[in-house]
Length: 97
Image (cartoon, rainbow, N blue to C red; front, side, top):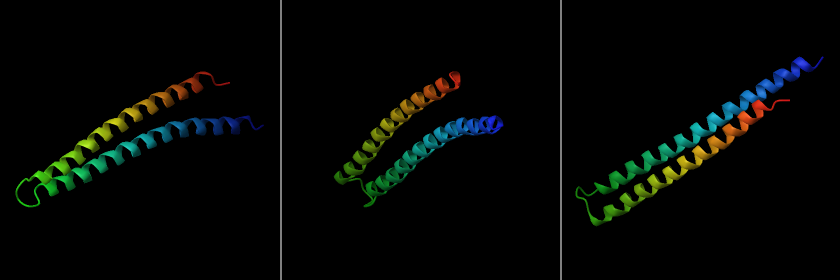
């Protein structure tokens, strides 16, 4: 008698995995882009603060360069996590008992 209820619960469980994977990826990518935009805007304002570009402008440029490298590293990690979790979810879907 509980079989139809269990089918519904399992269906919701598998759909929730896909939705949570997408939500995590979107949140992480959006957070990285927001951080990059905020810090690059801050760095640009520091560079033109005195009306002339000075030697102190190297620090904001280095910050933006560091954030860019960090953003690339996060993108690689996100791609790896996405690939692994997708493979696990597909494996679960193929081997449903």
